[in-house]
Length: 237
Length: 384
Ligand SMILES: Nc1ncnc2c1ncn2[C@@H]1O[C@H](COP(=O)(O)OP(=O)(O)OP(=O)(O)O)[C@@H](O)[C@H]1O
Ligand SMILES: [Mg+2]
Image 1 (cartoon, rainbow over the protein chains, first blue to last red):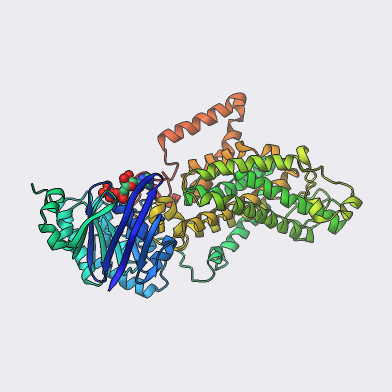
Image 2: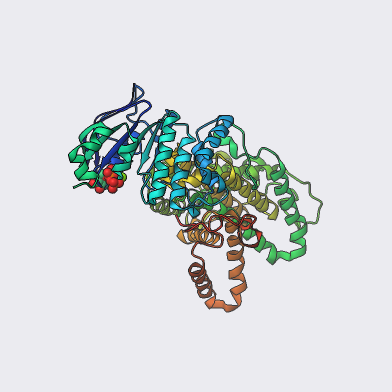
């Protein structure tokens, strides 16, 4: 079943035409990745989906419902959480308070408690630092907190914007392992990545974005083998 | 959880700031009575006036903290809201006295008139006191309404629009009030003029004078503590954490499902309410209010308190309000140089501690009071 469907999506930032008729579909239960160079428009796609910017044209359908014109908090309520680029940690609040805000819209304390346990299992480091100001966490820990926090909203679709950015190679491995784990537990994932190697390894399906338009797409394993992708994004001459 | 984190139950969102148990109310009453019946007679009139000014400044600084500190917006309109609240309340008590009692001297109880010159025993509360309380609430509500009108369009946008709009608002309020018509003083004329018309007679450029005297240490400290209670609930309840998330990162707050516009407006309206109440309290102490004296400078004084206290620290704002009220008095012996020294002290302070006294934390969360070692060193504490 198609969970998220973007059709002919157009976004303008003033005079800049950032997305030029992008169509993407995300099947339920999958990990779908968007790869592309800096400025290609990857984050813009996620922002449009989560309602942070308003597209100038096209359709966004989530589980059969149109998201057009809906504010972010409404979209989150429908089951779609966004971990924005740069993590968006509340630096002066404690880790605990950050997590609490993740479950901000929920009114089932029992369920939140259970989900917290799950987050602690995925990210034991986060649990150790509950009382610490989130700004004092390392970059990797902040990324874990950001993902854990988004999971507390109990999304069916999770949008991740460059979760591996600025992390040491070993931690990158960990983050991707966790992404796979989250997916295995039933959450569909739309993943934006610079690290095309890793992204293609965890994703089922991939889209390549070039200056605001989809250049090609297909099963991730196929794209990883394609000469064009290997040359442009995987660093193989 | 080691810290007090009031878990408020559900219920209409707007009511969650109302204290559920009455302990804070009791504390407020207790302190107010103490200030009125113990501090005032013991400390004398000079110290009492200072204590009164401190309480008013606490209300103002804490109310501005709700906006500039909690939600990270930048309001410069405090004086404007004080003027709105002060004039509205003054109109109610002044014209109300004529209407209800046929004279400009409404009956007041012992809480509103300590040391009555006639020496006669006074009852605790008279109907005039109730009129005064109602007037203060009315002043607060009018200011809150003005806050809503000013805040809604400017808080939809990210950025510094609020600063500009509130600055303009203060000026507009000043000009409008100064061009109002003269205050009526003839009892018959007042009795024959309908209320909406009376509200246009606010004294014009001379200011609104002959306001009945009500404001004592009791009322200001009661209001100050209640302001603190509301601010603390805003900061510490799980619902109120939404305010702080906006200051920390507006985009991320939206990603959490916080409707940022709604919360910014809410904080601004609550803050305007308290600024209006402070204006009302001052008007009934000085017995006059003049919009000409409530210009940008007055707003700026309050901004300094909030910045010095640490942009988001309630206790910091309280401390700064106290220090900045007392300091100019202590420096009085320096005569003409005192404002220079005052300014220098502020500059040094900002160089030594740019995040203010406490950053966004509370007094008991830092230094020797600190219970948890971790978490006090958040980088850029207090920066927006
Ligand atoms: N707020 C904005 N105002 C104006 N232009 C913007 C804005 N945000 C993005 N853009 C432009 O839109 C284009 C796409 O930006 P976007 O952030 O989506 O790129 P990206 O693919 O996520 O890049 P990166 O990998 O560097 O994060 C870029 O040319 C960028 O300069
Ligand atoms: Mg990006």
